Each structure stands twice: as C-alpha cells, then as structure tokens.
Image (cartoon, rainbow, N blue to C red; front, side):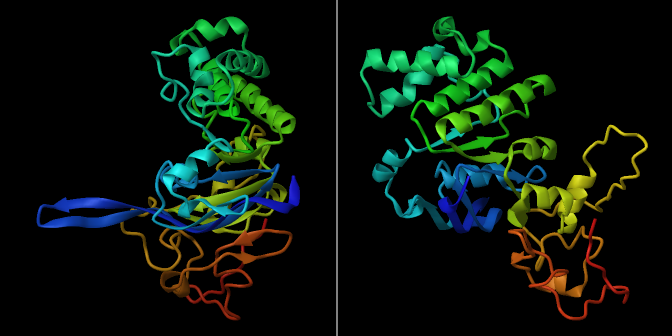
Length: 344
C-alpha cells in the first residue's frame, strides 16, 4: 500500500432513487441510497465497507463505476473526475476499473462457455488478436486455479466457488488497477470463502491491485482489509485502519456491529449491544444523526444536527457528537445524566 498516492477519491457522492407517484404527482419522494459520502483509497490497499443490509454498500460500489449514474458528487480516479466524463470517454476507463459481483451464477451468461465469458471484455475493447485472447484466457484460468478444460464448459457445470473464480478471472482480463468486490464470498461455504479470499489476496500482490471490498461479514472484512469504513443509512459513520476499528471502535453503531460477531469461547464475557428498533426508511431518513433513533447514547443535539467525520488520531475518523471535533464541552443526555464517550 502506497499511503502517499491516492488511486480513488470520492467527494460528497450521492445517489438518490426517485419514488414514482400517481399520475397527478409524478414523483412521490426519493430514496437516499448513498447520501453525501466522501473517502479515498490508496494504491495497493484494500478498503473494506461494512454495514447492515440496506445501508447502501452495493449502491456505492455500482455508483463509483457509474453502472448507476450518481445524483451528485465527484469520483476522481487517477486525477480524472469520472462523474464529468461522457460515456464515450468513460469506455476507455472501464479497462482500469472492474467489478466482482455477489452472485457468480447470475453475473455469468448461462448460454456462453467459460472461454467466451472470460475473453468477452477483451473482445469488446478490441484488445489482442483472437489467438492472443485465447492464450491470455488460458493463463488467467491457471491463475485462479481452474484447468484449461474448463474453457469449453458452461457456468452451470461448476460449483459456486469455481464460478466465483471464473468471475475473478473475467475481472482480471483487462489488467485493471482497481477492483470493486461486492459481497464476493457471501454465497459460498465457509471453507470455500477462505480459499477465494486467499486467492484474491495473492492476486492483489501479483497484479498490484487495489480493492474496494464490500461485505456485511465483519470477520471476512477483518481478514482482507487494510482500512475499514462503516456505513449506516447511506452514510459513512466511521472509517480508519483495521486495527483501530476492531480494537477501539468509536461510533456506537460500529460497537454494536462488532459485539454481534460470534465468539467461540463460551467463557467470554463479551457483552452484546442490542440496538432498539429497525433502521429508518431511507426514503424518509431522520433529521440530524441518522443513527439517533437507535442509539443508546443519543441526546438532543443528535436529533437536530448531522455530525461530520472528525479525526480522532491515527487516521481514524468518526461521525458522532460524542467525540472531539463534534462534541460540545458539556453534553447532557435526554434524562439529564452525563453521557460518557464509549471506549473498549
């Protein structure tokens, strides 16, 4: 990881989906799937994005690649703002940015043979001759641990783990520098998950790749990531180095997520944090801090003012009024008791 060189910078990215109304009212509202998100990724690193279902993780990944057009914000890749590029010029950047999808079966055309699937990006971009493409596809299959004979088979003839390896080979075919992996192992057995994760880490070193790794599984993210960002209701509430996030989580939501990780030691006195209620509707998010409706430490300011990400040292940022950069000198809870900053 090169901490002096940023590959991708996201500034105030938003993706709102309109809600269709009646014939008299064409637009009934909007779903704020990604709501004013900013972060950066260094060359060669893996940034993990975690959060509950519906937090906007997958939409964030698709919006960065402009598979879904952003509502607002900047997507700066190697110094170029992709959000401003017309589709004709964006086509050239597709070679450098690829995606590994969650469901390998759904993302592979069942009517195409594996050799065609892996070589299709090369054919679309008109790279290499047909013979050269075939040679490269064979080489890529070997890189992901599949035999040459697999080229003539169809996706349904493979296991889930093998299909995901095919998806990885296809993503690598264009020699990208940046890959977004959207829940790439969530549909796989635990034993297969570790194999695919280790494969991705080996390929990252071999091809000098940068990953945005999206997952709801904090154990998986801990295994592969260098830094971790936590999303809630379309917003990043905490981001920082993996060691800091897992050993000293600051945001109450991050602490609740980590407390829910199963522990094999039955004698462990680790206390689980039970969050009250369900996540708010993204079409009608609460004012102020989006988490205040479920936060055990919320106070009046949380209901009125949205906190920004404030650095707490060593590259760890948190969006919470309980911490320096957001907190008042005197913080009172709704029951007039002093609110203490959460620490492990």
